[in-house]
Length: 373
Ligand SMILES: Cc1cc2nc3c(=O)[nH]c(=O)nc-3n(C[C@H](O)[C@H](O)[C@H](O)COP(=O)(O)O)c2cc1C
Image (cartoon, rainbow, N blue to C red; front, side, top):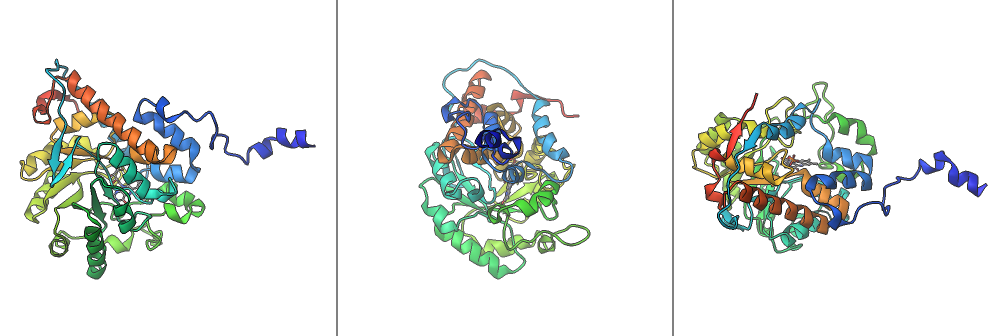
């Protein structure tokens, strides 16, 4: 009977065959960031994997974010010395032009959640982490978890008192800059909608943000967004303010007009407007519109050191990584975050050496040949 039961495909079907299985590779066996994704997939429940992976609607922009890097060639060159990668951004000293993008609900990936992510980031040469407004731990706990720098990301609320309280707490906890996300007003995640009944509470972006019930599927709580909100936010924030989700030169100019300290080119990793352009395609025109008046941050689609170099060549001051650190955290905890960041740092140095660019200042558009359709 026991033999019959243990051989039964029905019984085996109850067990995730990869979960904590010895076939999961050891951390130091992984050589590239991309190799973390299958481990992340194998170790976490499907709905948690889906929540990280999906994009909006048909996921055209999600795919295009990756494809765009194939349309940019790098011009090789001989290295004249060891590449130097340190910089300072909004008063934050950085060993590499790399930060962690804000992403929600890390407790679904690891029991220590964002505290573990910060520990991994700090261990990787003090990589700054942008803590999401919908983190699964209180900002005070995340702030106290490690010594590396962190910034805070805000989803503005129509009720100004709520913004005030959130921003006061983030600044008291020690955030060095505030990133205000201006996209994702009306995004719908079809894969999440299907998985919703399976999701543990911690994977939802916020327990206060219910699924949209309107027939046109718009979350009404974000429909008040207006550039005027920056005048309100400015009164509440003593650190630099950066707008995240800029995809046009016109919006970049509006950022400057409204006194913002930085522009963050992002399409939310393909999770905002489907059929929006990839960020790499619009980066140069946004950099031109900003004209050096503020730094320009960049994310969406970065998986390799050469991707980082291409974004820097097209004018980004630094790049942010969204899904990659989540894969590291879910697959191996803080050590996974550290390792995946160190892989990206090392690949950037390697790419700089292979193109003969030994300082961040020497990286410019002559380094790339773009062939966007
Ligand atoms: C699972 C997940 C959750 C996210 N949560 C947030 C968030 O809370 N706030 C925010 O501004 N952006 C959020 N983003 C967008 C990221 O900040 C970033 O723009 C995007 O992940 C970059 O693309 P990449 O994942 O290809 O690197 C999230 C992205 C993912 C994948």
